[in-house]
Image 1: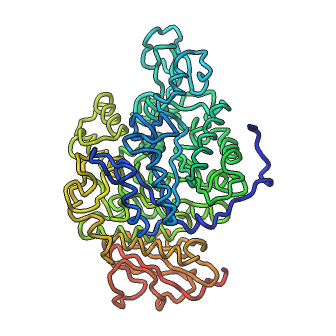
Image 2: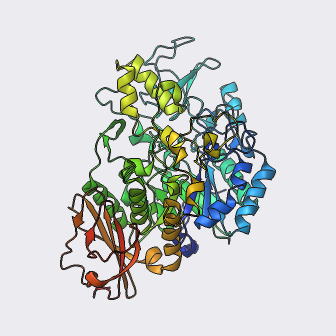
Image 3: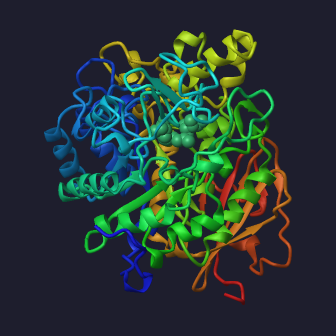
Amino acid sequence: MTVEQSPTETLQAPARDWFQRAVVYQIYPRSFADSNGDGVGDLRGIISKLDYLHKLGVDVVWLSPIYTSPQDDNGYDISDYRDVDPLFGTLEELRELTDGLHARGMKLVMDLVVNHTSDEHPWFIESRSSKDNPKRDWYWWRQPREPDAGASPRRGAEPNNWGSAFSGPAWEFDQATGEYYLHIFSKKQPDLNWENPEVRAAVYEMMNWWLDRGVDGFRMDVINFISKDTSLPDGPIADGKLFGDGTPFYIDGPRMHEFLQEMHREVFAGRTGELLTVGEMPGVTVEDAVLFTDPARAEVDMVFQFEHVALDQENGDKWRPKKLQLTELKETLGRWQEGLAETGWNSLYWGNHDQARAVSRFGDDSPQYRELSAKMLAGILHLHRGTPYVYQGEELGMTNMSFGAISDYRDIEVLNHHREATAHLGHTDAEVLAALAPLNRDNARTPVQWDASRHAGFTTGAPWIAVNPNANHINAAAQVDDPDSVYSFYRQVIALRHAEPVVSHGDFTMLLPDDPHVYAFTRALAGTTLLVLGNFSGTQQDVTLDGDALVDWGSAELVLGNYPADSGAPRLHLRPWELKVLRGGVARPDR
Ligand code: TEU
């Protein structure tokens, strides 16, 4: 294996057309469907819902981790990359799932979690066993700041001041050898040392093993954390924080592009199938994303950026929520559209297993407007230029959960934060619970609501996390055959992308950037222009377009809308949470 940068001109850019037309559906297996009554979703549960996914019209399923794992972080802590955790099923069942998807024309994308392993992975067990073990250098081991501190050094003796994403220091002291290891996430998720070429070779081998078994690509967990500033400097400490913010030193580190290009060469180059790679990249900038997703550079097809899901947080702190401003959302998403217009490609998402429910966060989940706003959000997102992702339950308009006590939560991020905030930062239980309610990750992890029966048809046993009580009226059984449901609307939006090249390939132009209530843009391709209007408010809005949009929209065809019938209301008038997609026959002259 060679590690020097390869000349980009020798690399073949793979065909992108298929994933530009595709819609991806994310399954968080633990919460999707349980077939065996143990209260945890599993592969056989997913297999039983393949026709549901096929009917929705999605092209790709991204499966959150199903590998062998102690489940400290619900599977994002992997102890065997080449097997399925018995909690979820077997390798044979995964094969059956893959075949079932392929038979229906869908693809399977696996989660690739290689910034860290579980501390129960054999690599780490070896690495921690002694300082001269051949795998010692596969992880980040460092001496305490005071090497003579003995068996249990004091707080502050950590090699640097970085905090873990899940509270507490990013270092854990290991008695056996008297050194600390780095863990950006939980202490059961030690970071792999990508500086070591053996680590990289082992990861590439594992990726090749999965592709040879027929999977169609990878969603790469925190992949922009794999290259770190190897001097591991102290990070800045903000007010009220116990630990330093190490992110400037482990996000987009100096060898990031080199590692991804090497991975591409060792794993993807030379493969002919239609594969998908998406890098999850907290903190990534538009400028970097252009480099990561430029096909000529052969790194990844697209990235998940985080800017639009940080806008409702004070100083980027998810435990200090603030009201979302539509103008900021448009500025952010518009900048990403513009930045990747010529080179690279966007991924589009409102939610995933780490985020609040889309309709509760960006829409209005009250009984009056939940369905309208869920549909409006679907239309706005999917008509941007990029590949849209649907998170399980979003297609039903599932909402945030109202948890009661801290004992109702399951997520390690929530539990650790609650402990730190109450024990060390002097906040009361009630304060912490109120602050974490809107944005915590368990909002997205309550079981998918299949029907109105006990436990929403998710399990016959006791669910691992409570089912949202609104399952009695928000559920798949009530929606699949109802043409006016949120589910049916998602079907229409997905079908529109498949039918209309302007949706997948057209140019994007943001309109009305300063309007606090209306999201407006056009898409244009070869003589077709779509005008997309979304009302992000519960009040009527009249839209006035400036001279830039040179089409007579007043008489344009309504391609898609979220109100039952077109009552003949003026085209540029929007009712509460209304979505309108209009087709103009005349493209702007400069197109
Ligand atoms: O998430 C990485 C990440 O930065 C966040 O979205 C994370 O949820 C953060 O703590 C938010 O405050 C990925 C996975 O999607 C997440 O589920 C894992 O817990 C994490 O990596 C570690 O593997």
